[in-house]
Image (cartoon, rainbow over all chains, first blue to last red; front, side, top):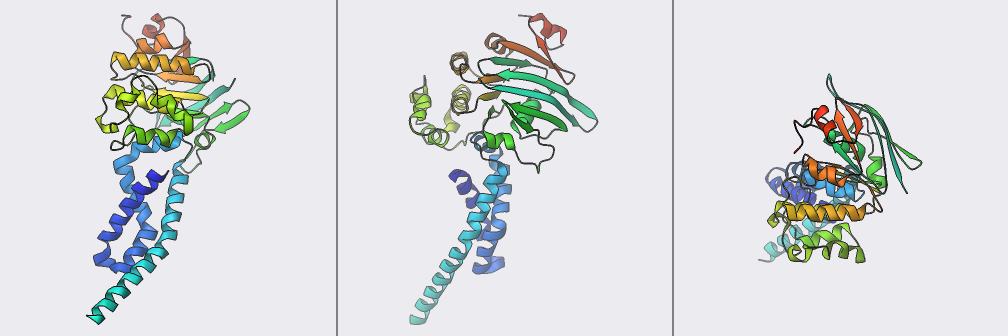
Length: 98
Length: 228
């Protein structure tokens, strides 16, 4: 199941990165946590659709995989938000010092 | 011993009825061969049984437990959750860029992994990426992975297609060894392999599954022109 999470999250992060110019750094974190997983799923469906059958054979339904991934990414996003906040603060602090 | 009883599977695409009241039974210890022309509904039937395809009606009974078919995509795939049925799709489902020795632990735990690692010809390919394997090697690996899971029933869609004779023999041997603990349904256009392997045979024509015992009945069913 971890590979599924990794694949979806890779596309979700990619989408969040691409959204930075429009949404800004904080906005990109929300993009990742809220719509990153559905976008990742669309990409997964396009590039890895057949791999679902490996998960089905191990007893994981599509619904289970998606909900788990979405919940984890949603819960991870406040941590990411904090990381972005700290990085921006540090950059700001460094710039002030400079 | 486990028994899979399939009743009244009904499936149509628009106005075209594909499966019409399909019924059959499969028990552990036997291999059932299913024959049918392209488009006759074999793969659709297997997907319905596995729970990845919807159907208008039908029910599966595994021992004393009932599993209605999924009528809409929103219905839960209870058969997948129950892990009563394993399914080998006709296409490759393994990630191409992952090495074989990294895939096996995703499917099997502990010493069960040796069933695949120590299988004939596997040590040679264990270090390769799935995308580097030949068609026969990949299919053989897929059959080993799905076959060694705990499901009492196994649905195999084209396990022999495009597979070289050497790997066909290995797949044959493996499936015969599995028969003691599983009920296996096989369908493939390499009909001689399926005929040789199966204990019972059925042909799917006009949406109905019919039992057959003689190869000549495949001609009568419109599946073959002659027996080679």
